[in-house]
Image (cartoon, rainbow, N blue to C red; front, top):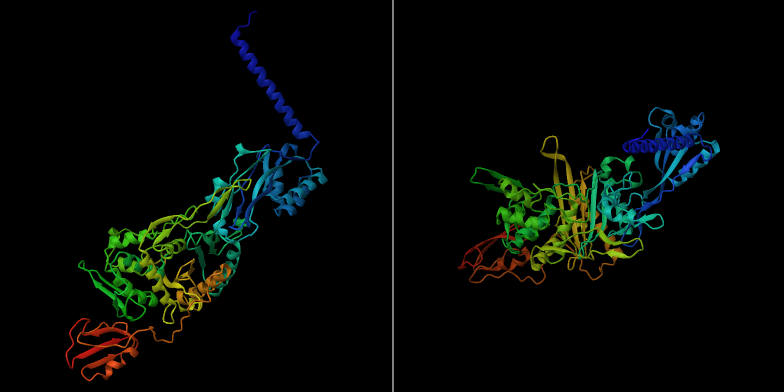
Length: 626
């Protein structure tokens, strides 16, 4: 009988399938009944080691270590010993005995994981237990796991990895591809990822976290953000978001502690934003240092559309210029100043400071904040933005924007990456400072810095931030918070904030804080954020050796003493006496050819006649002081 060739191929295939089936059965029987080994420890051909994370000085912040996944092959398990093993293993793994027992004896697939990512010490204890009991059918697979030796230090910045050792948040996620090992580059069974050096200083970070936590507790606040930036490079020196968590046990932490209050939480900034609104209007050329506005306790404007806008101020400040607007945190002055520019110009300049876009600090998921386009504005929007409402910002943006003031009008890209090194330690990337854009002239930037120095005078809202032997440019703020239920401003929730650049003559450091929903004795930025910023600035100055001894101290007794200001004199033409203190006007009272009336105390805010008008014999001169 002749077998056709086409059937021969069928017989060969059937034979091979049958042979493979026999091999599988033999292997199954071996695993089920072999008594050679109670425990199988995998020896994978390639072990992937994720790169480490360090601070700028090389202090270790995150590193891989050997962990193990414990699994069982049910057909090979030693029958009758499951309960003994489960009871003793539960003590080692801190697991429920019956959970382990159910995995060993319950229905389901023959292969089951008992525990994942157990430590080396737990592995050794379980290995010994298995041999002592003669318990077969277990397998330990070695995997790489992440350890954070500094625990909760800079937790939100560093982030954490998931079960597959893949970055899920913070720097772990932002630099995941850099840190991850490439198995194709393995040598001797090991593949290593590159290491990342962050710009933060772990020593400064630790010290600031201590005082930040005290501030949070003392003010019964919901949360706190603090960021310290190197003004000339944009490098982030400290990055604090409270409450925080230990990334070694991130799954056990409250989810609210995962929130990054520095780069991902957006809020209305309040009066600190007046620094940027006034800088924007100044840069647009609409006002200068001599421009002034009258604050009588409120801003009022009627629009042709029929809309009436009224914004209350903290007080009646009289005639105010940029310096006084910042010193007193004058809402009316800021609002009236915004009337000097168009909505589109104001919007464009604020966007140039980086608001409404990501700051680009090498972090994944930065919140760009929100500033609506002018087409969506009401008549109230422009003056309200000028005082820090109707827009959303992040703490990172607020600090980042200040680099433009510190660098003569040039906005820098803030960064958290110091350098990247390969597994041998060789530096393969080292980012340099990047200028994003020029926003304003150096003269205007310097002028704003000088105006901000008035905030730490005794009459300023930030006097509690003053350091007597160091010049500081400061601004405080207290912002109302929208109630999510009523969609109106809450009567009890506020954000207290303060920014400082120092030393003012050549800023080297920028510090900014926001304290969210304080419930302590005060909710005002000038009362709780300003003294906190003072403590932060003193620590930074001491740690980095900021010159302080030669700095001029400011003594203020309630009177402004302007060195070299001459006594007021009136000739044939009325001079500009705005800003003159009362003591410089006393000589005018002795004039017999004029009738001089001085009303109020302080400094001249209004005068009649106006500057430049002709003066006649016996004319009435009225000077209003505040």
